[in-house]
Length: 412
Image (cartoon, rainbow, N blue to C red; front, side, top):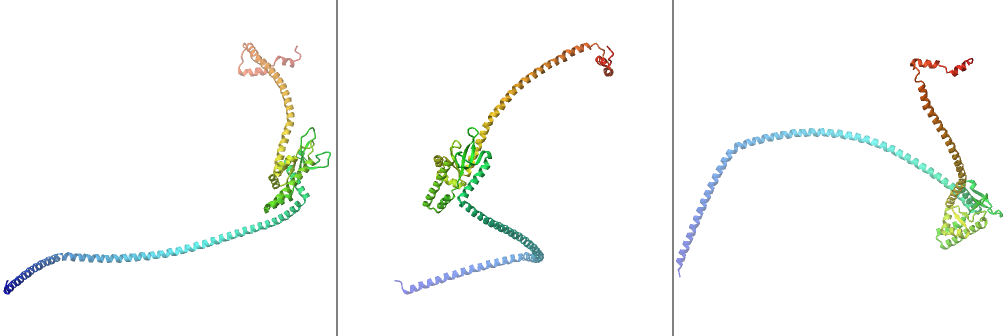
């Protein structure tokens, strides 16, 4: 085992070795720092030389930059002055434009106010006139309604009486007959049965055997109260009342048809049927709806007619009258045609004689013109031809022998 001195010596050697190594490292670091400082000094010297070389160029650029700065400052000053001048001119123009716009707007406002005032006055005047006219029309309408109400009241009073109702129906039937038929085609207050006293208000004359006509009786009835009761019940929706009113109206119409059949249908003086006239279309439509038209025609030989149906029936009768007139006149036309045929045969005979005489005269004229002309030409062929100037006097001086004998009676 080594002793302590050897260990101490070894430690001292190691410490000296470490110190020597540290000294070497420090010297190496100092050399590197010195070389770096020298390199930096050289770089600074080179940079200083380069800066010294660029100093004149920088001076010139600085001078140029100052000149550009001065030019820019001068341009900015001139531009500022120009902008200020333009802004002043623009402000003046804007002020003028604003004043002009204000004047124009004032003129437009006054014009619009004037037109609006004028239009408003015209519209108000027109509206007042329209309202006044409408109020006047309303006033007249109210007056007419009042007069109509009075007329309706009078009509209600008239229609409330059975007799006046019948007269109104007869008057309407008379107006329809006058419009469609001629006075000789119908008669008023006719006794259909010569042995009886009953008279029918109107009857149409139809052709019969001989000179005596056959009459078609027309009677006017107006069961207004029964129809009004039916309409009122239907409007209220009372089924029982409607059935009762329908039965009552049907019974009245059957009673009317029975009276017409018993009083006015008497063949051969009348037709075997008659017409029952109802003055209103509503009543006639209700009768049609009840199915009474065919029933009354079948049971009582009475036809129901309303105003329109009556007009159509009379128009058909008018066409029948015209057809009958044509048939009556056809015999006369046939006689006239027969006479014309006979006269035409005589005319043909006379025309044939005239044609023969004209043919003979034409042959005589042909013979005279042809044969006699040739003979005269042959006879005159040897006669001396006179000049044109002497031919006319010779013809004028020539007197035929017959004329000379007439002028001189002593010549034998």
